[in-house]
Length: 313
Length: 288
Image (cartoon, rainbow over the protein chains, first blue to last red):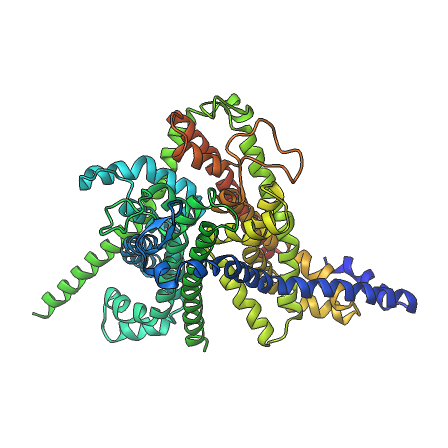
């Protein structure tokens, strides 16, 4: 491998000055592109923010912010139209609540099992399956929720329809499990072994060590894992679009059909006249969604950084 | 007294470990069940005609060939755009960027791009590519949208792959007089290649399964012919599954399961491919 590269290096060191200058210009050209590509992530992020602001903010010229945020009626085609996003916001809350209530205890317990208890063989079978779960497209999860889960939920809770927040929340809990499991497991593994050994030396059992030493030491990482899971649940679109039921009223319980913010955008954008009020209102929902997930992700990132620094010698 | 306390502590440990194992089972079993169910129910729908014919009778009969082809075009278009940019950005972050505010800003942007909901990428694609750049509801607009979404992933995986290349490779190359770019081009990139490929295959798998962005940017449900140019409309597997399952009445159930199976096979086979490349590269590194 090394031997093949030598001629290139000697050619550069060669005597022809004109050739060298041309190389250097070519090199500057490439390095210019490298720099631009490095900036692109910032450009795209700023582009998203700029577009959401430009298309979304004008809705407030027509609908005052308090009516938009606290209004409970979303009637985009009535005369005059009203745009209150409370139903979508509350739906998102319910579904995220259901999803987190399931995925956090199960995910953290599964991570503790993988990091602290499971024999190597079990771990090496379970981990690929968890990764497989992360690979299943959200539309397939929506399809499964539609075909298999919602009939079960309907009969179990004796509902008019199984397409409701609860079904959507259960499907979403499955979808946020992979990130919660993998980030929590990494956090538990990062806890230095001396901590555990000190605990054993004091006479604690393995379980007491997990619950009183490992998990508290990894708490910031686990918190980040939970936040990433929540972010995932808030932003997920297809599953909730297919399973949550799509009702426009403010849902009072998770067993009602509902429409979270992502689904409201996805189902409305096809019919919205470009540049019209409904179009602007949907972009404004996109803005709310963006700010929410951004906040969750920034906090998670901060917490993860802190965890990393904590054990870095 | 003392022995009794120890046994009760051991008992509570056994109970707790049992509960943890149950939690792991709660994660694993649904996955196995979902995949088996799709394979069994979808398997009966799969036939040569299903895979090679265009849909007829509003999707009730015929096959899903245009959706399969559309999805492959999308994967290809996404990676052609996202891979070069991702690799160049990865090179910038590892080989050029200093430890300063700009680098921190770029890294912050990458973390946040990864967390932006897919439907917001859809809105972005609609506003920028479909409307502002006037690409229309096209394969190109959808590929660009998915590429923006894949960007965070291709940058991160390229960066990790390049960082993993040992310093000695760079130092040896620089010591014999190679320039910075020659070192990157001939020493660093070849070593980082397996990692970069793994990342791009994963990004393609992700692009194949994305539905929300292409729903906004305009995938079509039924098209009589395949897209002839990047500016044509297209069908895609995930969007097809969404429409047959949730929108169009009277589609036979076996057809829905069949579409789900084909989509799952495409997405997961690329996932498995990425794992295989990663494992082989790791084995080669250890053996040499």
